[in-house]
Each structure stands twice: as C-alpha cells, then as structure tokens.
Length: 411
Ligand code: HEM
Image (tube, rainbow, N blue to C red; front, side, top):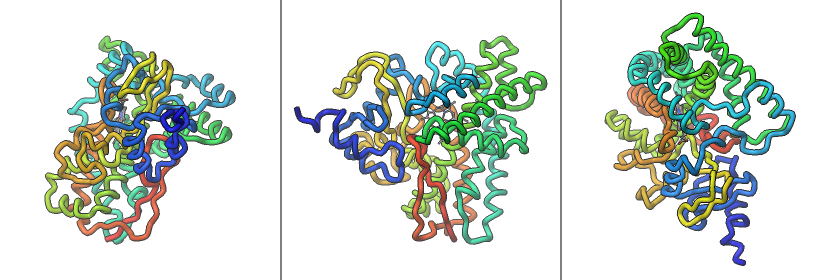
C-alpha cells in the first residue's frame, strides 16, 4: 500500500499543527497541492484545504451539518462535562451550531433585529470611540495597538449593541475569553474546569440579561428580540439568551483579529498602506483583501451526516471535518497570485472568511464597518505609522482564531 496516499498516515498529518497558528500557510499550500483532504491524527478531523471543496461543504448543510461547530475539539473530561451539563450549556448555540428548521426560524427573527438601521445608529458612536482611543496614544509616537485599540473597540461596540452597562464590561470580557478557550483551545483538565465554571456564570448572565429586558425594554438588540417575541414571533427566552451568549463572542475576538491582522499586513507590505493614506476610497476593497489573505477565523468545522464524496474524496458518515478557509482563500484556482496581498484585487470578495450558505456570518457588515472606521481614522491621523522593527509575533494557541497577541507600532 502506498502509505503517502492514505489520508490517515500522511506526512501532512504530522506537519499540520492544528493549534499552532504562527505560520500555517506553507503547510496549507502543500496540502492544496499534494493532499487536498488529509486526516489530522492530533485532532481526529479530516482537513480540507481547496477552495471549491470548502465552499461545497459549507453550502451543503443537509449532508455537512454545523452541529459540531461549537463543541470542544477534543473529548471533554467527565468532570468538565458534568459542570457544563449542570450549567445547561451542553449543545448550546445561538445560530452557528443549529440546523433547519430551528436555524431558519431563529435566523429570520434575528435578522429582523440586526438590521442596517441598527448599524447606522451605531456608526457615529463607533467613530467617536475610535477617535477617543486613537487620541489617547496619538502624541506618544508609539503604541501597542492590540491593547490600546483593537482589543477593546469591538468589545465596546458589541456591548453597545447588546446594551451591557459599562461597569459589567470587564467581567463579561473575562467570561468570553473562557468561552473561547473551552471551545477552541487545547488546555489541561484543570484549566478546562476553571473555564467551564466561568462559562456557566456567563450563561447565567445572558439568561438574566433577557429577564431584565422583560422587566424593562431598552434600545438594544436583546430588547428588539424580546419585542419580536411579544409581537408573536416564535423565539424562546433560552434562544434569545443563547443569541446574546454567542453574539458577545462572535462579534468580539473575530473583529479584533481582523483589525490586528489587517493593520499588521498593511504595514508589512507598506505600499498598500500608502495607497490607503492617499485614497480612502480603497479601504472597503482593502478590507476584503485582508479577509482573504489573512482571515481572522482561519478554520471552521462541519460533520458529515452520511457518507459523501467531495473533490474525489469520500468522507465516512460521522466524519468530523476542519475547513481551512485560510487555505481556500489562497487557492490559485480562484485567486491569481493568491499568496500576495493586493488591496486592489478584483475578486477579493469571493473569500470564504465569513463562511458560505445558510450560516453566512450575520455580523459581516458590522465587522467591516468597524474596521473601515478605524482605517479611515488611522490613515488620516497617523499616515507615517510603521511596525516597530524586530518584534516577534505570537498567536493564541487554538484551532480557529488567528491574530497577533500584540502589535507594536511607531511613527
Ligand atoms: C471579521 C469578523 C468576523 C468573522 C471573520 C466572522 C466569521 C464567521 C464565520 C466563519 C461564521 C460561520 C459561517 C458558517 O458556518 O458558514 C460566522 C457565523 C456567524 N457570525 Fe461571524 N464573523 C465575524 C464577525 C461577526 C460579528 C461582528 C458578529 C455579530 C455581531 C457575528 C455574528 C455571527 C453569527 C450570529 C453567526 C452565525 C450565523 C448562522 O449560523 O446563521 N460575526 N461568522
């Protein structure tokens, strides 16, 4: 038997480090060229790297369900599971881990609350916040942009959207980190126990948030969902709380990462930054290209509900699948010179970074709006921004969310 042709024993399986996101792109390229589907022994997942295959799996929700998208990637120790079961968080999902008909019903109602009108309402506040944060470091001549701008900004925006009071922000952020560690990282049992307890508190907080809105409606996203429920739309309190539970998470780290990756790449390939300083109308296209070139959600998950063949590879029933959007986005079959950042690329928007099909990211317009505002303000206020030389970039240890932990800049 030619062992190199076997997805279970491939060289790639050894080279692929699912939790180490420092520089996954060379292995992704090798996978696309040599073994577009291989089995990761470390993860127990089939790994898919070509654009067409990823897109087909995303779109075929009947066969490739998203039900595993929010489950921890490795088996959960009994003691951790018990905390999660008792806390009511096993199988909890807002939308991304749900399937039709529940998914269709809830997504329709959530779309009615998450409208362009609500985004337009947020825009001046987002700009004011971005300006306030930039002005704090503008005269210093150097900054650590993750800490001083891109970590907090999307968190504050999502808190505005959800109507979380300022004094609760720090606590909620800490819970959201535990939520990420539990669902996407590879941690010791002791750490998992800690995170599971934190996540239960976070879930309790979300349930209470709905209860508070039922006492007194406000001008925010959960209140809009409660209003729709009161008008007769079929969405339960638990489903509204689950939306808040996920929204806090879905809308924070992802957007922080988009901005961290984006500013880093633009400054690294500086002619792109200079183009934006000279012509702000290029910013929306640049954001699409950054999403393509270096997506903040670099992988996502699906499970095969039956045996199915994609791109010539047959997935067994029950197969857990890891989709490498960070790889599909550089597939030469779709993107010419895919390994190069080109902010004027015509088809950048075809990237897979927000998924595809029925689960396509609901927050995409908000994430892009936030980054557009930040880039408009930064390019105008600090055009001579550059990366501080000789820094090494670290990336959080997890399967899906890739962004530098810190980003030192100077001007
Ligand atoms: C750059 C920022 C973001 C990225 C890269 C991103 C990426 C993704 C991805 C990959 C999915 C799964 C798609 C699939 O399974 O087909 C998703 C779903 C989702 N995202 Fe985002 N996201 C971002 C920002 C946001 C924001 C700001 C929000 C909310 C405020 C949000 C809310 C959601 C929701 C609710 C879903 C589930 C949709 C469904 O299952 O129907 N995301 N996102």
